[in-house]
Image (cartoon, rainbow, N blue to C red):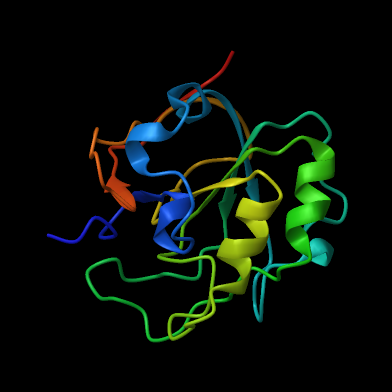
Length: 164
């Protein structure tokens, strides 16, 4: 099984041979309060998609795009994260970006610009979330990776519980 199937974490080693492996990641990042937002991601996911959404102080951001409609089939296309979103989110305090998509980049990308820019800004990546039916707001998140020594990614069982 690939470590990048279903809901999974991408370690920086996935796209940077000098990046951290799964076993080296700070687990505290994957447990704690997360903010769920819904965005319009018709073409791509950029700064404009977050207009009117207060993100200051958000450490874990889970983004529902609604673009992956049939989870039983791998999508032919997804809206990619625009690389310039990374410094915008980092300046707000975001350190974990989770999406309901199988990747933050175009599915056929070899350069992985969003992966690299997010990592360069200190933001870790959680992909393939199932956020259907969740309302925007605060949740407790647990999405722990397996302790894979040489892992460039890891499947997770991501669970959220509404706060308050």
